Every structure is written in C-alpha cells, then in structure tokens.
Image (cartoon, rainbow, N blue to C red; front, side):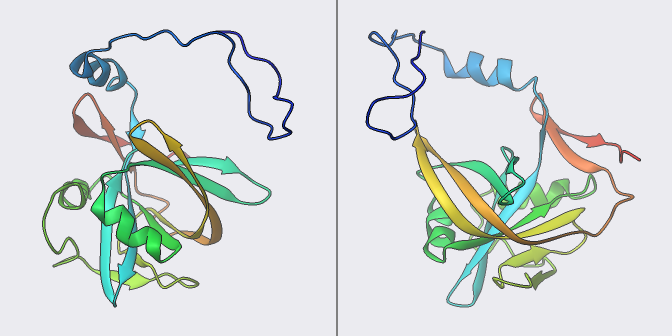
Amino acid sequence: MTAEPADSSGSGRERHLGAPAIVEIDPAVYRNVLGHLPTGVTVVSGSTAGRPVGLTVGSFFSVSLAPPLVGFCVARSSTTWNVIAEQQAFGVSVLADDQDATSGRFASRVEDKFDGISWEPAPVTGSPLIHSAVAHLDCEIFDVFPAGDHDVVIGRVLALEVHRAEAGALVFARGGYHRHESID
C-alpha cells in the first residue's frame, strides 16, 4: 500500500491511496501466528466510588520520552476499562514472573478482581498498584485512538518506580506464561 507523507488538511495523518484490500484472516490463525511474539504482562487499574478495578493488558509499550508517554491496547467491549477511563487516570503494575495467578485473575470475569490482592494507591492519581510487582507507573490519560475493535490508549506518566529489580518479568507467549530473566 502506498502512502503520501501527509494530507493537505494539516492533520499530520497519512492518506492511503486506492481502495484497501479486503482480506479474510482466520482469527485462530491470527492468534497462533502473533502468539509467537512474547509480550510483557501488566495490570492496568483505576478506581470508581472508592472501589479498585483492573484488567490484564499484554500490549503495554513505551511511546515517548518527552513528554513521558506509554500506551496499551484495550477492547472497546471492556466494561472494566470504561470504568477506569471515566477517571481519566490509571495505574500500571508490571507483573513479576511469580504473579501469573494475579494476571489470570485480572483477565477473568470475577466480580471483585482485587479481593485478596494486596495493593496501595499510586502517589499522584491514587490508582491501585499491586504489591510485589516489578514496577509501577502512575498515569493520566493523554489520548485515545480507535483501532478496529480496540482503542489505543496513550497515558502521560506522572510517577514511576522499580520495586523488584531482581525479579523477572512475567511474559505471555504461545498461550502460556513464561519467565523473563532480569537483565543486569
């Protein structure tokens, strides 16, 4: 597909020439192929009416140093994300390799995902941050972009800290959890 540098409206977005090709991709094949790419596992969290809420996210990434921005992708159908987004702020807990049960809990449809989970409020936004995580980030929503059946959420980092530098990060690939050794 060919793209021009930018459209004439000044929006900075690329325009693609020609009609897009419609290709049918089997969802099972799509998951299988992309499942070979390991992803770090995080819990994105917030609160509503003083009650902590959160969801597992495997698409977390760094966006920019100046300003400090991070991003992740979330299904538009996520009711948990919709509750967090209303607060315009969120916390991120980078899970350690011994927190696979925590990841599974936050990926489930359990009513109170924080039941039995130890946490503390983030320093700026008060978003819940899970104890024993490798690292935490405290963010406000900077922008949200629609992308298919998901949204790409960009957050401005307000505070961040590494808590367990010696721990390996939890990694998900090929349908299961794996250990990513700490890099010195």
